[in-house]
Amino acid sequence: MHLNLSRKSYPNTFICDRKLELKSNFGSDEEDINLIFQFFETLPNLKSLKLLQFNLLSRPIDISQLIASLRHAPLLELVLDTGCPAIVEGPPTIGLSGLEKLSITWNNQATGSAHTHLYELIRPSLETLVDLVIDNHLSTDFDLQLLKPAGNTLRSFEYFLASNDEGILDIVPIIFPHLTSLSLRWDFTATRHSILWKVCIWSMTYGSRSSTYEFLQDGHISALAKNQNLLDLTLSSDFEVESGDTIKRSHDDYPWYVRCYKRRLKVTQEVVLACHKLQRCSWIQLPNGRLSSLKHSFVVEERVSDGKKTRVVRGMKQDWMGRNHWNYGFIVKCKSEDLPGDIIGENDSLSDDDDEI
Image 1 (cartoon, one colour):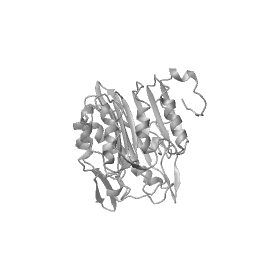
Image 2 (tube, rainbow, N blue to C red; image 1 turned 30 degrees about the horizontal axis):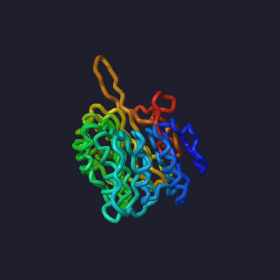
Image 3 (tube, rainbow, N blue to C red; image 1 turned 60 degrees about the horizontal axis):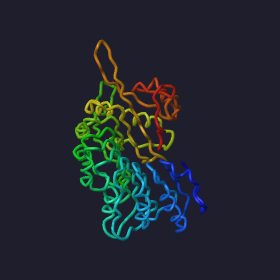
Image 4 (cartoon, rainbow, N blue to C red; image 1 turned 45 degrees about the vertical axis):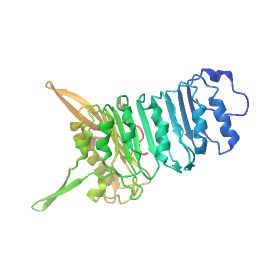
């Protein structure tokens, strides 16, 4: 439901609503903010609330008032965006208990520990959470060990890091041993790189011909293999730094697109060998010379031939695929049938989100 609130009395039909998505265009006007909180108090059956902010809907000082206005409701899902960066003062607000799905975009600093405020919003539901998203915009990372009580119930975890800490790949399967979906995104603002995968380059010369090969030499796959129940994996990563392969033009360097895709196809095939239940794997490639990030998605199909079962990785079609491109004197083959990975096109049964994010 999308609401355009006014200062008139609320219709009685709201009393039966169980799901509410509120996209705010409110500014910091205190009367408007109080109006929203009063409205929440009239929804005794509310099970799901998504509070998305375009401006300061709930200023950080009002988080306690927001939570107070929801304590009466049997909420199972809460999506909360804390809005523009600001300073949180006073004691931490204790969050809601009994939540199964919780998503927090956290922009706030605090006079004490900002992570303490974030943790207290999560803590009361730790033993019931099935799906948790933490979009952390602080300069330091949240201590995931605090979330250990969620280990028995949590099945889906999405986390945005402000650093390039690779150790989280070893920590996650210990804290959350039953995950079926994992999404980790590193965005180290000092370099604008994600974590680096160690790609080794090997050149060979045969008479007058020379060939260059790339192969992966990295411990990240052994860490991912510890997630024994994983079905869906999304990671941001940087293969191009170690390969010394930077984009030459922001939009039409199609040979570079092909190389980036092939690298991620190859590493996906290796991850699939280590994670035996994996069905889907996506790679977020940060801009680093482009105007937007790229998303490389792959699916895993099981095929049987001569009574033998194999798992095959297939690429998902991206916007630059599907046709050949003229590239400064030569043709770059970008048709799906010319690329490896048995690419799933627009007319296949499977579909994907936009590949640019």
